[in-house]
Amino acid sequence: MSSTHDTTAGAGQAVSLAWPDPDIALATMVREREMNTLSLELLDELGASLTASVAGGARALIVTGQGRAFCAGAHLRYFTQPDPRIGSGAFALRDKYLQRIAELFDSIETLPIPVIAAINGFALGGGCEMSLACDLRVMADNTKIGVPETRIGALAGAGGVQKLHRFVGRGKALEWVMLGSHVTAQEAFTHGLVTSVHASADLLPAAMELAKRFRTLGPRAVAQSKAAVRLCGDADLTTARSVGLEALAMLIDGEEWREGMSAFMEKRPPRFPPL
Image (spheres, one colour):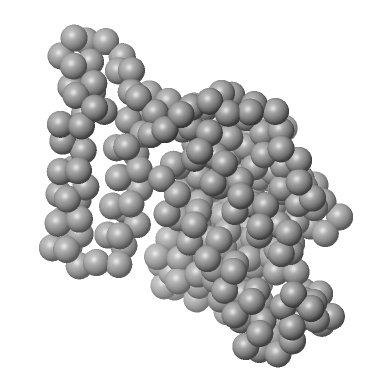
């Protein structure tokens, strides 16, 4: 895959895609006034940013928000003021809106490059679920994360309940989900939900430094490792081991494998080809 791309920012109505480094993509949700809620436009443009990041040869993608929110969740006007693109009623909302959110988050999880959520502001409801679909999370120290849907008579339906259970355990997940908790950055870090916590001014630089670490790693090996971890979460130990063996077999004797082995034997940094 080619690593050439347009290094200028692609500014949409809801998401701006930039290349702060030649092989690192940065998708910024820019609907600041609407707290970066999950409008149809945002879903479309963030999905397009995922595709463009891989096509442009990114070794990693950072997703962040502009303003007070990373993403404040669903665009609630669709529930109270029906949009003709969606319609009204539970099944129309499920099939034409909520399913699209779930599919976008699935796309983040299955993207063959690492995705880092730089949680600059509130990551609530669908915003929390989006961050949980990312591979790594770094968080500003003055913000909060959570799935507070019980406060409005709803629940997190795009994977947040299930992923919180896996990330922080049954007891803590029950507490946060049932109480609709707004979890502080430090508590999220304590329970392993985020990789690190930073002052707001240091958040993007920290995300960039994390993204740059993938430059020295085999992109196919990273992609296979990401897929193996994701698949093993749903499997018994024997099946999970088989998944790992199959992933390794797919790498053996490939171009990336041969370069890694040669570099190790020659005691030099590897020069991995792009994905």
